[in-house]
Length: 394
Image 1 (cartoon, rainbow, N blue to C red):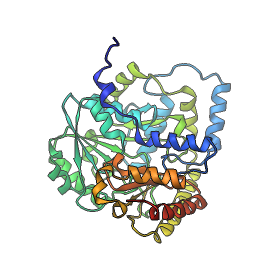
Image 2 (cartoon, rainbow, N blue to C red; image 1 turned 180 degrees about the vertical axis):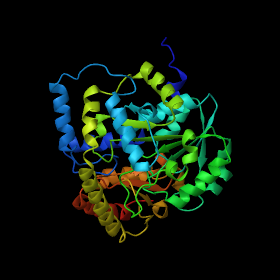
Image 3 (spheres, rainbow, N blue to C red; image 1 turned 60 degrees about the vertical axis):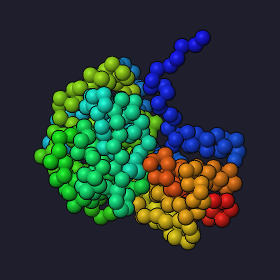
């Protein structure tokens, strides 16, 4: 008789995005001509100065443990960068360096939540938001937008978010690419002032915004709420450093201190070499701008190609590198419960096109498409999509 695993082993499933991306990669490795639009990962190389800094760190023998919250010079660099970018002063002791933005989020939720606490999460959402809340024995309040892909104060109020312990606000949004502008954030901030909860501002795609106004952080429009806001970002997306696992959390010192104590007992420090390399990343802003411009061109190419595809609807994304495609018109109403999983399987099997069903993000009837691929691949992907939709049984 085998022992039964604990509660957490039963309630947590695999990440749908990583699972489907792995399936696509396996087919590619087997020689199948798959176009993989599942992964939230830039296809650009890491900037050369970062690679050079990593080699120098190895040569100089930086192979030992560091302080759990990160090497002092990196925390200082992050603090200085966000002080200049936002116009608000941040000190090094208000920064933690973690293994990607995902660990920053988990650390923050861990020290802010008590068992049974509720967390308000706008829909659609990144798949790990509800999973992490569940893992910490919290409860999710889904906040559905009344129109488009962005929530309003009225949506938050209607959902019961005022009773939450924390609100997760992601901008630019994964999976839709929606970006909250200054006025929208100001309205949400005004609503937040009448409540008593923490706000986790996930800004990992902050450098990938395609509007003239660029990225605006909630803390910039509401500096009086700074003591309640945990900013979450990192180098993975904008700097093409996904595998380096360097994320940043910025919050008031008591919150950062608590997150650091937790990290000291879980993973300790981020890879020392990656931290040394990360110092060079902040000098790679020209390369970041070039990648952003390339993503902008790819978005435009994808949107132009999709404009001729019948049976689907979409909103043009203003940020990140995702587009949410509403395919509900091509799905048999009698089989809506199965959502887009059947459609995604059909596209992968028949057209060698890998996408992610929107059900994974709380958006049934949709597919998430990543445009972190070349313009030629994106045009070919849309051609395959068009054929696949015609042959889909519904």
